[in-house]
Length: 177
Image (cartoon, rainbow, N blue to C red; front, side):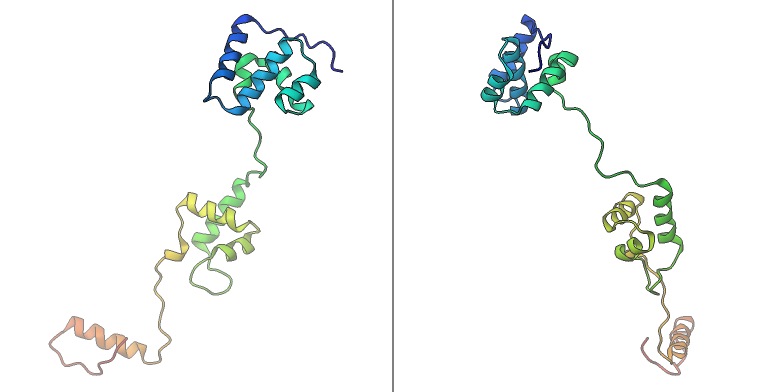
């Protein structure tokens, strides 16, 4: 038994709580909270409040205490809770951005992938994706010039460049790049 709570519901609060219960557009959680306080104000026991509202004992106690602390306004807002995922350190975010923009991937690829960056920095793939999106980085879209591994590449480039410089001269070896 919790004993005397010292909970008294004044007529103005009683009217507000009754309006919340009567309003068909009120969220159900607000209706339950208002019912708990009104039943408590009518000196009903916890067991009867639990039976009428369908809430557990701890929930009934919570809303009784919240009304005592913050009044009707306290019943209409939820307390903020900390995120279950801790915030990533700024140094780690800076490391991901620095490695993306300055270093080449360890596998010799042309750009960083989310998985490769996650493995290299010890950050989850989802977090790497969020960091890149917030920083405006899209490493898979970076255009980089890659040399061909064709043995005749230099001669072909010289031939094509020569045609652009002097289009009327006859081409020596015409080939495709």
